[in-house]
Image 1: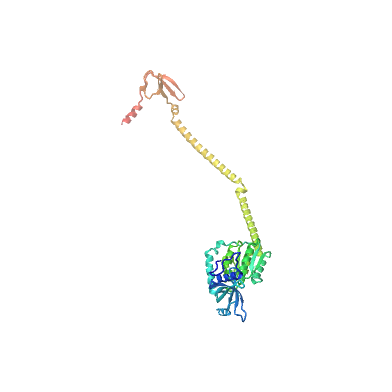
Image 2 (image 1 turned 45 degrees about the horizontal axis):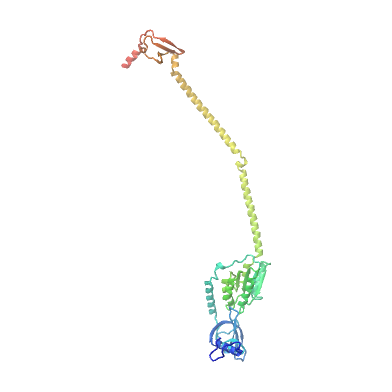
Length: 429
């Protein structure tokens, strides 16, 4: 610390400052800060009649820090609304350091309560900030286990929310294990206590889901559950968190950050703890439906097997062969009859042709007294003669009749026949 001009020199082991000097220097530095505006939550008001100074304790809602505030009683009286413990305010004052006790306080000259509209506007700004950072992204929501080993409950001591959660949870599942952490659920000490309980339950090995619950209330009463520090802690927790704050119309920012939002503490218990009776009834119904479906399937398959068994091809496998044998035998018989008929027809045709050939053939002609005369000429084969001119005297002949053949020689020509002459004349005419 650099001493002001004209003051004592720097401290050293050989020339240490006395406490009064240190306190005076600290007071000088603090007084240089001047007037500041501070926002916080009033946790204590001490105002005694007849005194000229009122004492207040102003606390940061998002951190475990506070400062003593002093003011004249008239400052409290000039406030727009009566100031009470838990009220959010904005103060204007100067930091004061009292060297005698080495204590720091804020001497204020004006106190302005933060109205509902301003609180809601601040919550809305915080909502937009957290939304832009992705804390409300549905993809970050952790699934709620169907059958949690243990349920962590953060709520006020002996409140309606605690009774509702416990009664509904144990009514649905008597063996449910609930780890309860009682904390303030409104006021300046609520957020730090809830943060400690959340960290404790998040580290608990047997807790699979954490419920933060409280009953309904005014906007000021529910302010701790829209605190930025609490919202970030819930988003960073490894255990799924269920928000069950107030009633259906209440929507603190914790509802948007939590993995599951329940309308009421009772609704939260119903959504995280399965109903044993309903589950057993569902299992019994599914077992009955499965058994019925299996019986129906067996009946259908049995009917199908009976249908297959009763089919002719299965009941009498050789019947098809027997039917085909009869058809083959009928076809063979018909084929044989057709062949016999065709053969008979062809035999009859052959006989007719044979008779016609026999009638027209030389044998029948020879049998009627005709003969075939062939001329023999040395080594040449014999050839039939048809005119007496081809048979001069001395010609060797072979004469064939019906029952054989003989050799002959031409002795002299006979008189020519007249019939051919007449036929010739007729032809000439």
